[in-house]
Length: 167
Image 1 (spheres, helix red, strand yellow):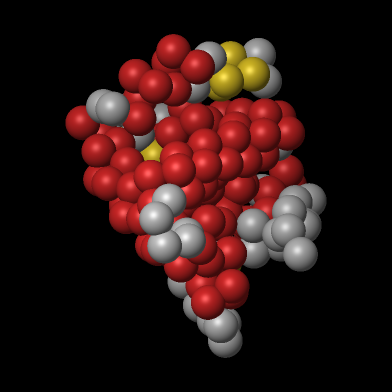
Image 2 (cartoon, one colour):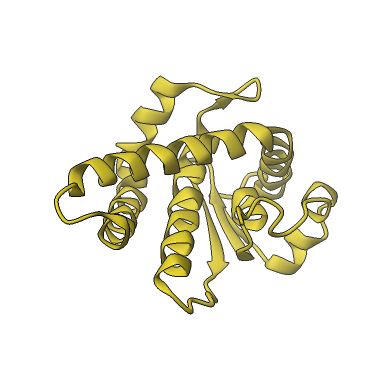
């Protein structure tokens, strides 16, 4: 949710349980040309990867082995498939006639690394929000926290929306 906000996505409610968190984001892209489509697709894939990478944080650093385990887990298979589709779209827009796999690999690595950089940069806020959400969860099996409730959490209010969009 933090990475979604810094990449300019409007954030919504959060569904949270002891094993997984799922943030809702509103998708309202302005896509006047293929460059805008590609940039949007990259940002969206970054957000999806960031959700998984945030689960692998330890002392503000991502534990790579844990991240790779999480991305392949049953809980994250849908996000992984969406990322794969988005990366294929970006590669289809950006590739030259014969180098699809090279472009695909480059974009995949770029998106993963960008997500990792942002998750580590905003690790403190991610961890603070996670603690807030776990407190809200209490003894419940699951909880939904509204966008309004999230917007009142101080560490989330302090994050500038769209501040990490690359120009």
